[in-house]
Length: 166
Figure: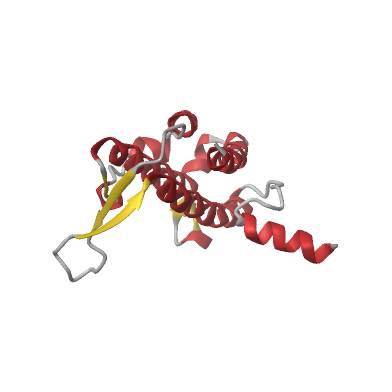
């Protein structure tokens, strides 16, 4: 599936940057990220995909029901293993799902929207790229590592830049 390949490409870039970090750097608060850590952003990416995986089974996806597992944000190797597991679990048939959530801080009533698995994979991919852009800021602060030019950049932007360069 081409969509699974796109997620894999993002995960390869993300994993490559994480492998270059020490455990301390993975957990180090970044001033430029409002004192959040690289690990916290990685946990958020992983848990969004986990919500989708759980929702595939039940038929209802609720991203607000994340576990917020501290082990993911503090154990880089554990997080890397989960990225591999998520990628492997994406090879599924598309199916109708319901998206559930409360999207207003003052509201208490759940809202429900029809969606499907592939649409939610796309959402999570775009969400991952957004967080990778933030992670890039943190990496530049704490590690000054070389990253691919496309790290944390949407594929449409990469394609647009290539067409402008020609």
